[in-house]
Image (tube, rainbow, N blue to C red; front, side, top):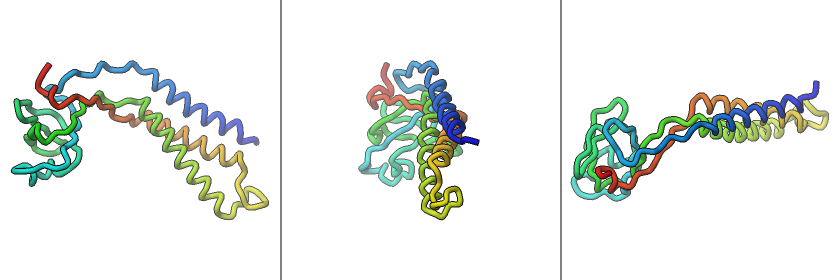
Length: 176
């Protein structure tokens, strides 16, 4: 049996899944942060004063749900934790979640499949192989391995998805 058509079919299947997922309708990003939005906050690297000892502010980035918005602070509840109040002065950038994108997940999975399949092919090729008399795996086997891992990665990535973010300027947090 010739494995080339099978490898080509698997690679085309992975690309087809990624392409179909990419055809999804894009969401209109929100213009400002509102209560219950899922947000990702990037903090300013050097925080001084009373906030410098806050565990959440010592991280570079965090994500959670908005619980309150004031003139100087944003309330954030991370999963499984109590809400915290974060001063706007410590926020460098904020992104609003647009939900999960199956297309981005499929493309990311496709890329991971390529990396994993290539690494596996190199590993197998570096060892003695019984597939070929001279000790190397054939091009067909390499194509089948890489095509298969790419297709599997695209299918898994499509199922898992990847979260999409829309960045909003910090000064727009409380304004229209």
